[in-house]
Image (cartoon, one colour):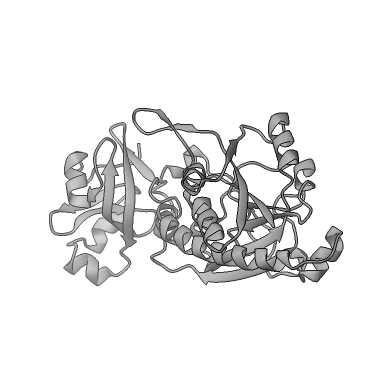
Length: 336
């Protein structure tokens, strides 16, 4: 069974590697073009391209598959049996979906029909969901609307951030894709509807949850709004890790790890912050800076203890060092 793999980020690259390790024949990879990254703005290949090159698999890139006649002709000539799509980053038009005889299959990082769209892992954390998961679905023209043949859930813990949850979901995705490909290999049906029936595909209307859309993350989403309640701020920091940031004197300060302080006894005993200080504080106000405990900032309801952060142009550090680098002191208002 000849497979063409479509994907771009490291998450997808790990899936590609595991699919090949399981003995599947991947004859080509389609990925996004090299992009300028880093301080030098040098062109760098996608993680999937790097993995495919290491594996000796031919790589093709496309800026827009819906307008790319050259790549379409390449795909027609390759005549693959099945396409596997993992975080490719472009919507495949119907004429591409119709090319492989055993269909196009997508690994989507949510428990569909919840969080269809581009950023399901981020929004599952930001939205304070208790669980998420992976679905392997048959692709159709609608956005992540196809019937599902494999699904597995995982709990979202209080300490999970985008990196830890993505890593866990990647492992689940690889496992379900390998299992799905083995099932697809054994299909004897010739038409799509019979094939889906043979694979016991489940229509999303019969799955738990109401349809929701995980829109693309925008630049403005990364800026922390200190007037929000502390729990929302923490979940945004975790869901957008490591890129949620605040501003001070025109410089960006990334907040990488923080915790809520809701216990009044802790405020007095550990942080030396009394209830009167909190009542008078405004969102974004620095309530404490010291070497022992670092940095505490007021949110819309509770104080937030900053543990680790990064001033632009500097390395990741503890919050006390961060405060010194950023010239932060008690009663400063950050966020502007």
